[in-house]
Length: 61
Image 1 (spheres, rainbow, N blue to C red):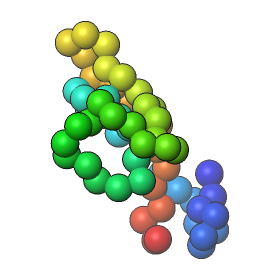
Image 2: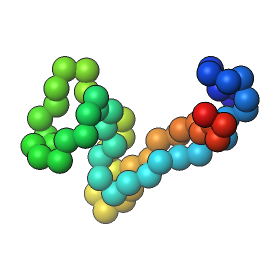
Image 3: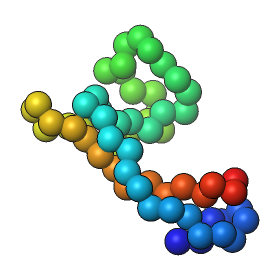
Image 4: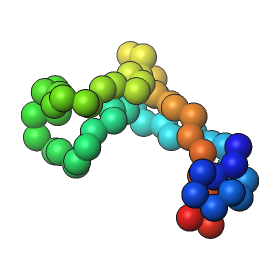
C-alpha cells in the first residue's frame, strides 16, 4: 500500500494490546469508559487474550 503523503510503500503490521484499542482525539488517562463524540473502539481483547488491529507504517514519513 502506498503512503498518501510521499508515495513510498508502507509496511503492513499489527498493533496489539491486552487492553481495548480505541480511537481518541487526545490522550486521556482517567475515566476511560466515557467516550467523547467521534471516539470509538477499534478492538476489544477476548477474556484473557489480546486485541490486535492491522496498521501500515511509512518509515519515510
